[in-house]
Length: 392
Ligand SMILES: Cc1ncc(COP(=O)(O)O)c(C=O)c1O
Image (cartoon, rainbow, N blue to C red):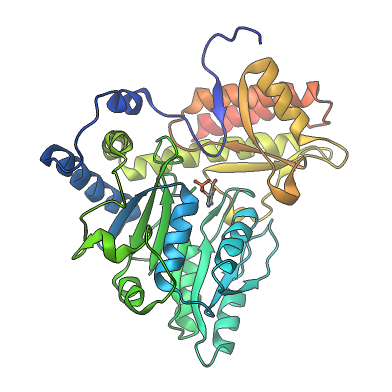
């Protein structure tokens, strides 16, 4: 193993860079989670989380990965035999679907082109056809991390309303939360699912669930078995009063700090920074795409993601070779293509604790990596990214 100096440029779309401030906040002795001091920290965290989710309803936290929040969302509002509608987005809509099917829930996909994003009109049409209101919920991934497509959550809410359908609206905001706009209450989201390890700049290991009053009411009559995930066990009124087991105290120390950092920068400031970085990454890839080089996987300019850019390499090229070269030669880590995109796509994560020079360093490494991996590409990607940042 060669000696590496300097920092690894960690450009994966989750987990993401953990700021030194957050690491330092976690570097402290444990605390009794039944003690007043911890309760005050938890209280501050829940208030801060609600601001990030843009909700005044219920906020819950678990010691678990994002998969846990997926499971919590479904087992609390569904019963065996229910039908859920899943607009197809990519790897993560498929994985959520698989989980749901294990519970005896019937899944109906609304097919969509992974590169263009979901069509709210198709969702509306399917809901209108469900005259007996058999569909219990719509499960939507906001930012599909495998494709770099940011799906239109508000437009799908409008589609549900236009169909006059009472389905609950469950949204995965795991790789959009704290990176670009998400509005739980304004967009009529009933269950919003988030994770610690992306825009919130924390280690993996915690997940969050925003619960609307409508979803809480539905959880009273839902009959799927649940214990760890049971909202009713965690709540005292609308407040989370206890964790399922020992509270993840160190993650909460980190969360308190990361929420303070977001408050200092302001959410709008965080979104503007992600928008600048996303635009620069896309400008770079557009220059590479000249003459049939690597191109943006997302072909819908209205739905490009500001937290992750998926890059499709030309036929006959291997995206994993590029990732290997960048990791070995330059100590830069990019995300790989997931499921059917393995080897065809690499992903530039630009979410969380990241600034312009960090992005530029990584894009420079990727451009060198394209040459070294023998992937034909247009020239001037790095220059295009610089121009985009200067103009922002
Ligand atoms: C959009 C999305 N949903 C769900 C997940 C699953 O989260 P976790 O890996 O924390 O279980 C991920 C992980 O990357 C994701 O990007």
